[in-house]
Image (cartoon, rainbow over all chains, first blue to last red; front, top):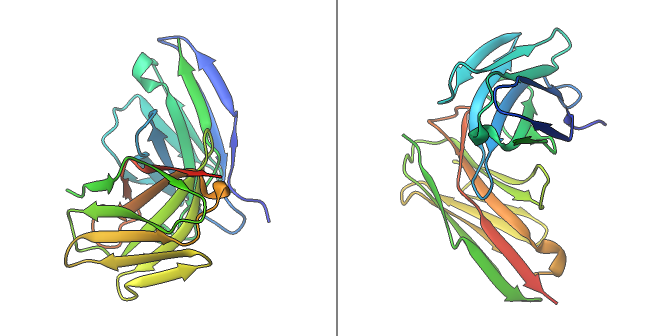
Length: 113
Length: 113
């Protein structure tokens, strides 16, 4: 039973560039949430996708956008990268938008130079 | 606004010791609370999910309790082992049963052989 998978594992970008991170939910799950975890901090909620629509959004600027595909996989896009965007980006999936527990992937480590 | 605090930030114990990790939250109108484990550079592994009606949940050497009236949860680890070394995070919904989780900064546990 495949868990939540994220790609790539690591990514290095420079300021001003754009990046796309990908997530495949756990088998049977239809809801994907994205979190940003800065070093030494707890994860912070970015947004959640269900039925290909953004359902909830945390306190993140419009530079952060996402998409969910018919197969429930999801992408996180960040434009105009800033040094402060350096973090571990975690994807979590669940069956239904209000269901716990959420299952997390191993994340994508994004470094901005 | 939900805020989650974890004390202590770091803990070092000898192997075999029983220990307690603490988590406090400000909005007590939650349906559940979740404890996670995070190994260095990795994603989150769900350990225990406590529903507000349960007050307590056990898995092996782990026991988590939830006291909504005081806004507190504890994670008890019995007979600690070096393999328990990791960062432990608690997370509560922003409100009620919301799928949007608010995390504490975590407690970094080191179990010395």
